[in-house]
Length: 113
Length: 115
Image 1 (tube, chains in turn yellow, purple):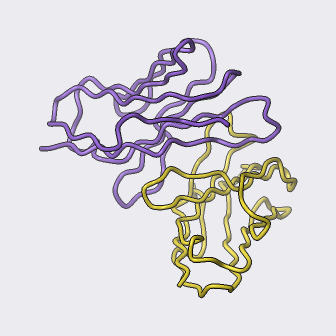
Image 2 (cartoon, helix red, strand yellow; image 1 turned 90 degrees about the vertical axis):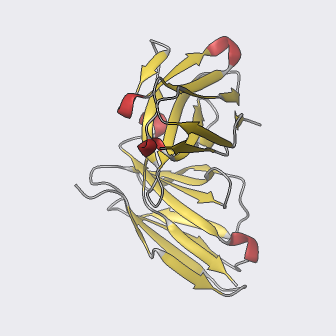
Image 3 (cartoon, chains in turn cyan, purple; image 1 turned 180 degrees about the vertical axis):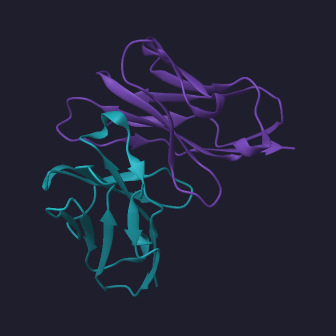
């Protein structure tokens, strides 16, 4: 079975640019969450979507947005990139919600220069 | 605000030594609790989880964790570590009743096992 797949794996962007990160959950999983992991820290919650509706938002500025599509895949968008947005962005999926624990993808390494 | 505290940032042990990694969380309500592991070059994997019931939870690869509600703790243990246990370990909590479905992670503990 395919796990959670994320694309691209690595990305370099310039300050002020926009970026879109993509995630395909495990087949049958309806809940997708996004996390940001800065070097030396644990993952930090950004968004959670279930059945295409936003179920939670972490403490991130409005430059961060996301959506979930009818096939349960998801996109994370970040506008007006800052150097501090450089991080590993993780997507995680679960059948319903986080109570069973999420299965994580390998992440997208975003570098903002 | 809810938070998860992992007491040790970096632990070095010899093979066959016993392991205990501390984890405390700050939230007064009902929680689910998790330990995730990240092996070098790999993605986060679920090691074990506490849902309800027996506070002693057994996970993969011989790991176990004990939920002590009165201490808001969920420490990870293994009686005898192996070189292959070298990894970063994250404790995480999912609070109920907050209106969202976030999982809050600790900062992680890097475990290095000497052969």
